[in-house]
Length: 298
Image 1 (cartoon, one colour):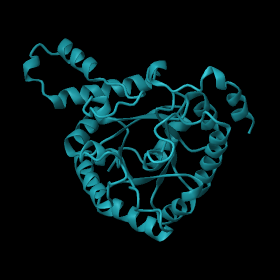
Image 2: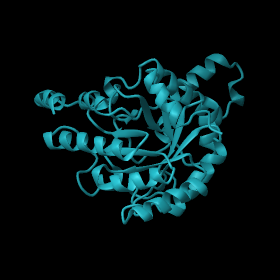
Image 3: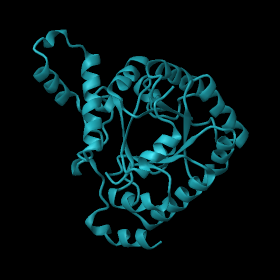
Image 4: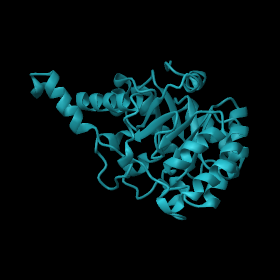
């Protein structure tokens, strides 16, 4: 059983304690995450890109996601797991969404699921929650749609985006999500948006004013060469240096040990409010400072 559940995550928010999350797709990385005692793993549809070589997350199938989830659940049985519903597995109807979510939980072994979108998927979120499955919402840069619409650019630099963000966050909360993941939202707007809802708000590239941080394990370890987001900090060099300091017999250290130390350093920096520093944040920009006041007033 995972050491955390939905109630525990909410309690951490109330106690103002931050959560360290990562994304994993396979047994060995998941096992390293568990040893390092991170708090939760998202089994992301980005596994289609990182592990299978797709150019986006869109081709990833539910069957592939079940396989990723099974591997991670075997490697990290004590970690709270969130399974990603891939594109095409929930958009058609609430019935389809519930059926797909049930498969990820029953066959994949995850404790909850995540899906992208706000108002447009609120009815599906409610149906899944009513079926007894915890749901994480996902707003801001949503990879399943961003690649073909707005591209991977920071979110929250227009009035319309701010209006939509607040509306979507409130709709997701009403639908019953246990948390909301904000991806690529400019840090100044995230600081305001966090107070629009009562559920935990986690960030991936959305500044430091959130209840927890998420960075892909493959970015933390520098294992994915095709794309490096601004917010993705590599910890592997610092991990190697730290291991060399603590171990005279470095030749017997393997990559698993380095991965564990990398995740430990990542968690320490989150808890000590050292990550993300300014170089890993998206800013609203000097020319858009009026939008901050707008966000505070709507």
